[in-house]
Image (cartoon, rainbow, N blue to C red; front, top):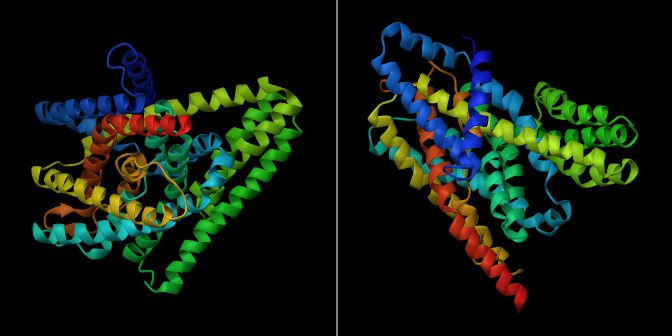
Length: 429
């Protein structure tokens, strides 16, 4: 069995879990599938330990054939971000543009350095001589909230628009910014890029601004073609071409494909879709919208099952799992400080939901993107005691991600419900 067959079977399994979840667990779909992936991966790990060497080797080799980094960072990510951005309300986004900009830039950078600093001292305290640059790298990959996990839960809960647009907007944009920060630190750590302000700023600006401008250009092109196209199927194919060829071209040019897809998706969802609906009728745009809803749900399901498979290939020890558990409060503390400090300023100029910081902190879920960045760390180059840096980072990241999606995802509902009640009470006054 090759990697393609495994993905096909995992796709069928994801649909089966989503279907049975409606009648048995009745959990949010993303959480149900992630929980299922953890159970399956644990069963596979037990199978690898109990079965003979040949069977164990076969299982791990099939899973290892999936290049998770390439599959997500160079493939699925473009589709997932584009689909999520299509649903963002641009008018609501404009009302909180400064809050989201500060959360995306300041909070992501601040969290990266706080996680890097605290994890560095934690590693040293427990006898792991991890260099600070690699701790910063961990901070960069774990700080961005994952829109794939966040958007699904926020939408299902029908959170108030004020907090919803903050969470959605931040998660989509800090995804791209987080990738740029990670790429910049990665270049310094592994490619010997000189760590001076000018060089790092140039890398960051070219990647980020280049991605946004490229996304704007794709949106203009896509808008022109869709508005002037009479064939419904071609309009759908144009939207498929953007997160495939457009995302690939951005990556080849060395600019942020993630930010390009978010920019393009927001513009096409708010400008192209309404104009196409007026010119061609609502049925054509509804057809495209339903397609992207289904594609988004399917790729989400597949992604989290593949995440579960990834851990089967990593040698697990109680020591590394313990470090992963220690990183959970560090990540949450960094998130709380990086989100809470801007709100001290925000509240001077506008009235906000009193639960905003709590929701942004506890609802700042991590997902497949963090694992994909961790998986991108070169294997076999850096060793910490007897552990490969790649394996160490993947297991620690996996621990944080699983806690984030299952524990935080399952317990965020009461906070959002309080926010909904507060919004309703405010509307009655």
